[in-house]
Image (cartoon, rainbow, N blue to C red; front, side, top):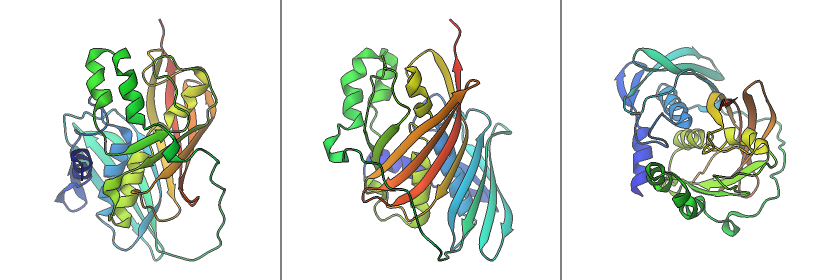
Amino acid sequence: MTDTAKVLLDLLDLECLDTNLFRGSGSGGETPTRIYGGQVIAQALTAAYSTISGRLCHSLHAYFIRPGDPSRPVIYEVDPARDGRSFTTRRVVAMQNGKQILNLAASFHAQEDGWDHQHKIPEVPDPGSLEPRHKILKRNANRFAQDKQAELLRPRPFEIREVEPRDPMAPEKTSDANQMWVRMEAARGAGPELQHILLAYVSDFGLLGSSMRPHGLTFHNPEAMTASLDHAMWFHAPVQLQNWHLYSMDAPFAGSARGFNRGSIFTEDGKLVASVAQEGLLRPLKR
């Protein structure tokens, strides 16, 4: 296991303070300035799973309320809203400095059989034919300010290959279609709960960027203020994130300083394992 993978798995291993009360670290995730949204969602889901046995999450809905401070721990309080015969519901509040930074509702379902259908996986190049994201960042690192280069080049636990990567500093206007392959070798052997938690972490990668693509913007572009506002996720089938998964995203709408983004996550052989939706702040900056 790589050092970066161990850091992430440690982040997701919460300390139990009391019944339904947990503490997680804020540092060690994707960004040094504020806590990455997928990290808070994954930790909140971890807290919820810690109060449940024998059922898997089928959906979660979260609101980002305040930016998280990575220099401070996050407290997660779980409300055991309902334990039913088929469904279990949990509400989780994430807090720093006595204030909410995120609240999340998650539902867990006992295994049942039913009808099956799904949309087909999009036809895209296979991951082996695409350049790894870290090589693209390394090639472009000298175009960034010195203080940002180390963060760009920092090793990460996930391997990502974008189907249509754009120039990070001078992005062209293009389709909102936004697709990438992702996997995490350290997920091998993880149980179904941790696989869900890791996929929840991944689900915030690049999603808001879908609504930025038609406007020639990236997260490195100083023309826009961006932040995730809410996040919803549905789990459809078992996840094995040590294998390649296609995250196929789009953004059917942007307006009123917000962008709406959707995603479907498929296994390499075409099984739809999860769906995602998110609205994000996309505010033009005045010059």
